[in-house]
Length: 114
Image (tube, rainbow, N blue to C red):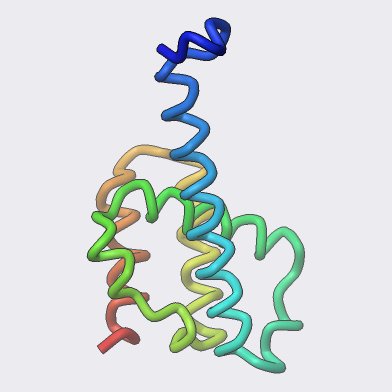
């Protein structure tokens, strides 16, 4: 524990760091996706984007950094995004089978990352 800040534990610092890294990774993925979709980006609602950010964050926490870094979000098409948003909504509604569901999202992205 930091002797200068006794009210902040190492665990608190670790969790804040984790959340910051996750948010940064998700924002980069969303920016790459937006750049790849070009004009099709406007097809997606704020709710769609919130669901994408959420599932990308879950995927970031699930994947190793090397696996995450190998994913090319800029190569996804609008149909891929629609599929991922649908999966995200299903997962939020029923979190059973989370690992398999996140693997499905990863597989959609990975298929375009080749």
